[in-house]
Length: 525
Image (cartoon, rainbow, N blue to C red):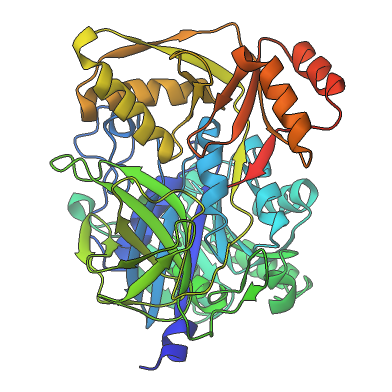
């Protein structure tokens, strides 16, 4: 298969949702149908005997939540699928925002009883910045919830997305029987099997099949026929409107029971876009270009607890990766021979022999690679749009074992490099400050310091409430500011000058006093 054919069959997407909508569960079921795993983990409570394949951190397993991004690849019906399961909790939104820069489409999972929730709205705002195509899956039809017409109305009113149903539920809650596949005009039922295996799929080729009445009863069968007739009056699926984020195909089902997941996956791989072009500071990079380009959007420490490794996740934008090729690490100017890049296949990691645009590869990182770094075959490029946000909460690490001070600093630096929080070192003194967008991030860091670095620490609140990155086109003005404010100035891990104040009033006042300077609440990495 040629390079262009490989490009066309790639599908790279992220799953986004409000917490508890069933995102990790549907991730597992997509892997199940894609043949990547044999049995999905039960994602129910901290006492579950096994945990979601995509949740590998100890804290995720204890709490039953996703706080990191997992990358999983599998083949399905001739398509090469790269699935990114993002953190659901809002405290980890920065990680999710970065992941959305590395995908070509998104799967929005909704709780059918609740419709569009706050976290979903925030994530959709990010998708709109890039006109990301979005497919919708209304989950938990095995429970009572919104009428499907109400659910679509909720999506349209809340998100401004025109809905085009692709499947339609038959009943709800305990009366949920299956779905009608509007694309293939088939009625799909599910018969439960023993011992938690996939439910057996039973298909009727027509709404007029007499067995439909026998299966669900005359009243429910007639209701389905009426609904389908009403749906015929809706606007049809428009590939262009979908591609520009104006229209969303809608699927209904129950991920925990496998209902409607296959129908979703069948249509998703056919309707979602192949790899798209990406902007750089100087030009647009097209995926069909021959020279390889890619960018790092995430770093994860300690995927392998035995080796304390760090993995840089790199999205291939163009070209053809082959094992052993040399790539330029643009920020440092160094050429790197890439011999052991990794592909993620559910729980397994394998050495990557080749990769194409849309693929995510892992590069073993010993501290030289940062989020936002670009890799090319020689051209000096810098991909744009990967965000960092000024933290809103601040803590000081209190070491509980004085002999572990070096391990503490190492752990904080490595966890900050992967985006778990932001570490600021002072221009004067040694009082490091840790900043985050959400309080749960500090719990995760404390847990990971203990689990992965054998360091016990607690985090003490500080009388600090605002941080801003400081830049200026006037070197003398910046030098004067630095001299006059040394005690409140820090450097982040990328060496960016950062002003940290104990109140927003002080921050605003300082910005007024130095009009030649810019104080940034967010910046591109």
